[in-house]
Length: 142
Image 1 (cartoon, helix red, strand yellow):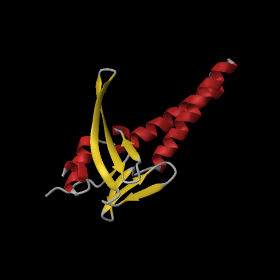
Image 2: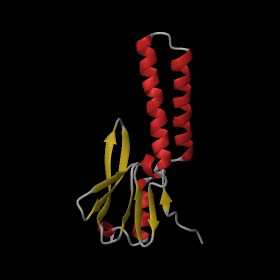
Image 3: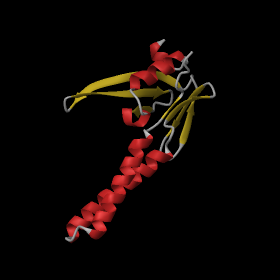
Image 4: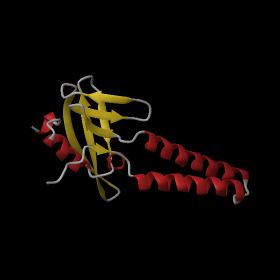
């Protein structure tokens, strides 16, 4: 008997890779780049990657089935959604640069839209929707 996944978040390897690239760019900005505009641009890119990696790590797990509802964790706060707070959960699919992109959208009763990508979930959003449907939390799919 297989157990179904109940938490989703950005992949650890991806976060570590972004942080590593940020450190490499920071090192390069300080030691290798000699022109001031280039040093500033590479430094900004390094800081941006490090902040992104830190905030992505802080927001883990991004989505979880907990206490009979959903827990959504953002960069600044955590929200718990009960089944009554969720009006619709759906997949939005579109083409972008020759690739099919899927997003998991969660509409809430207070007119908020939570949009989660494959990066946010660490897996295909369709799998997450299936798990939420199995848990009885996807009112748009019942």
